Image 1 (spheres, rainbow, N blue to C red):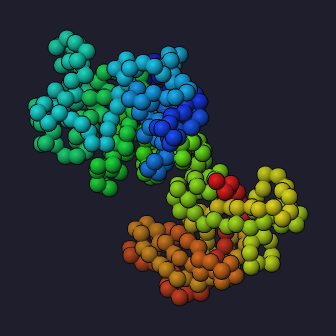
Image 2: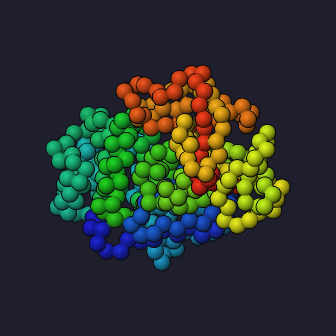
Length: 365
């Protein structure tokens, strides 16, 4: 098992495309995962993320492009020669084999000696904290324990790269959250290069070093979880990765502010460069970046009325009607009162605003 001390291998996908008949599943995709890092490939169903994972695993062949682990081109190697570990959503454990036998199956197929096999299986049981359950069968374990066994089975063969295909999709919410921490801690401890495929935004943000957001066979944006969430580059990324209020307007005279329909005064936004007055401009503002009541200094402000209020545990979500903009917006406010309470009531008049630096310019696509 890797100690995490030796240099972990990079995973590189260059110019990958894959079609099924006339349907283009993945197109001209480039992705590099630094050795020892975990990258989440995030997107909706049908975006091409699973096809990409299957090409890395060797279950599908790209029409064009290359896949490398370190300096080794694995594009045309069969799956069993790629030195990969893979964890599936449904675990795929053998029901008639014990936990220890499931974990050691890959070693058995590789004809590893019994003594060495037992040693490595015991090491993995210790890693996943199931030391006393080696003689049990998968049906006797909880869903989270079965997922740990599936992970151990993938890691025991010392893979260069670990592939995680929606690994937590079969678990309930509370167990899924605890497993996010467990898998992330294990990945960091071993220092193994990992590609996670998921449609779950929270999973991608909480587990990864970098997130690659995918749509229609292409990667739209790659960055740290903070970068991708706080500074989305496209409308799709802004709306898929959480909730966002999108404003469509035009560049105001002077080239450094936003004119919104129905409003005579320009709205300040931070532009990296002056833009052509009158040209289309779109910005995204996260609900938690908007304020109700207290207005940020130098920020725009609007008269508003609360039309919806929902308590969500540690924050309240509000639907707010803004007559001057002829639309409703969403605002999240951190809970600041007794459990279950909301600060603003239905029908209450208030003021809505935001800081200019929180209005992020996004492309339409």
